Amino acid sequence: MTISLRSATEADLMVVGALHQRSRVAAYSSFLPPEALADPTPEAMGRYWVERLTWEGADHRMTVAERDGRLVGFSYLGPDDEGDPATGLLNAIHLEPSERGRGTGRALMVDALDAMRARGWTRAVLWVLRDNAAARGFYERGGWTATGEQRDEHIGQALVPQLRYARRL
Image (cartoon, rainbow, N blue to C red; front, side, top):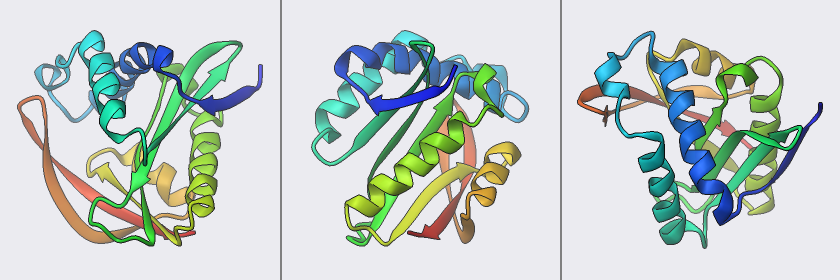
């Protein structure tokens, strides 16, 4: 019943997409309207990951977490979105809703930070939804601090504020 981590393969991406959609709905439904979370469909989210890794696969890394042979989470990281060559961006950690509180997210975060260090980055950043208190607490417990930077992005038709967090590697 232990968690195992491995690099994602193309065969994982449709499963990752469906998991990503379930994770978003579970994590964001307390502060986003249902219509904002209705799209994309799990299949569309899978196609999104296939397309994204086609373009970003050379310098990005997706890791999947498995429990008892079942994919239960993933992380995705790559270069800084603002172009700082010393900084890596943790693009995502998403879990099956039933995995919350079981150490899977922590294992994925530790693995991502180790991968960033291995790439020679000395700083890590991420964006988190401002109203996602659970995720903010998770990252803060992991040594991340808010930088004061904010941006707005759409989830469905909802304009959602995000906060930037950073930590030293």
